[in-house]
Image 1: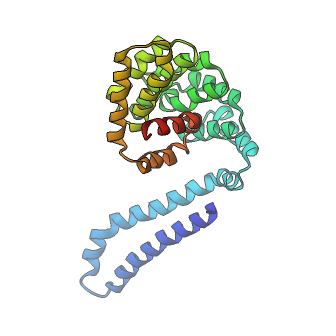
Image 2 (image 1 turned 90 degrees about the vertical axis):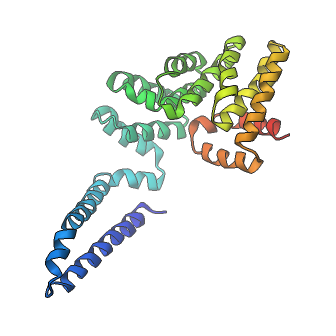
Image 3 (image 1 turned 120 degrees about the vertical axis):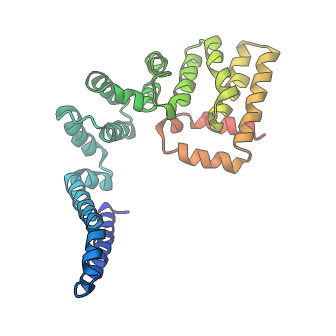
Length: 270
């Protein structure tokens, strides 16, 4: 849907509601209800007018950004965002995330890593907020050593909502680095305690399929089976899993491991 159309539709809705309120007021002007009506509703009317002004100001200040997104002109969008973020120093969470995603759309992982280094100096808290985005960019760039260091440093400081995923990726990069025993030490707690069905399933899957090839033992098989059972309680049917996959497909950390997610689904729901 066009941004201009969304802007126009939302604007018309706000103006229509404001007009209805003002019409009610003017219809009572010649009665004793006028003063009580205005006294009760003037704060609401003032806030509504501020909302309309704020919305229009936001749109016109970001009109070029919306235009480039609408055209899907990713190279031009990257140049525009770099100017706002890097050169003007506007390290807002929204713009940083959009710049990183735009570079990944262009398969330019080194540019994302370069942006990460700039953020580390300018606003390091953003790296904890978007740890999955910047860490996954290193995985996609095949900088496994760098990704391992990145996830290891943020497994306790990343935003709470993504902390389990950051821990899982830490285990995954340990596995890719050949540090199998250390990877199992990360996957086992996630298998037994994570409240996310996908993370639980992935952790138990890697314990069963990858770790067990190197570290054999009945205890490992038992933990893996417990994780599979937990995953089936959290996501009982394949349709539940598919719903999670639709959500994850819009996130870079999900899209980067699509192959493993598909293999994991076959294992869990076999």
